[in-house]
Amino acid sequence: MNIAKKMLVAVTLLAASASYAPVTAQEANPETSAIVMIVDFEGIMREASAPQDIRKQVEERRNGYQQEIEKRQQELREEDQKIAQQRTLLSAEVLQQKRQEFQQKVAEFQKFAQARNKVLDESLNEARVAFQKKLIEIIADVAEERSATLVLHKSQVILHANAMDASKEVFDRVNAAMPTFTVQFKEAS
Image 1: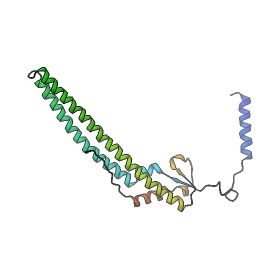
Image 2: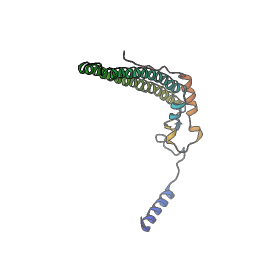
Image 3: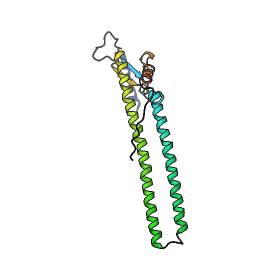
Image 4: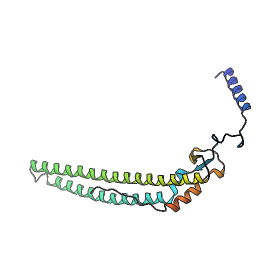
């Protein structure tokens, strides 16, 4: 940018700032003024007792699935070893048949493992959505009590007055309303 353009920008900014006059609450149009409330949504989602309970239940279920998957993997490895040991004893047709049956078992195992992961993902997602719904209801209640007309995520705000931050109040209410959460795992039979 050349010097003339820099000067033009500086003069424009100076003129704009000189004409700026802050509006006081009395002068503000009530239809356009906002009472702001700030909530640490992500922090509550991370630290509240119900989401922690959700994560714990999902992790316990994941560990159970992992043990079951490892057991089935071991069984498949052992079966593969048996087939390999029998290759000199069996005819080519019988060996081919055993290999096909084994590949079918491997494919079934893969579907089983994928289904378990899907159960975990869907259950976790549904639980989070249900918790978020309750959290938003509580935020709306607090906003109504404070007559707030604008609610912002704390992560979107650089500076704010401490009185605007309702995170602690929302956190306490959500923990009181939902101290635990039962995750529904929808497993196929």
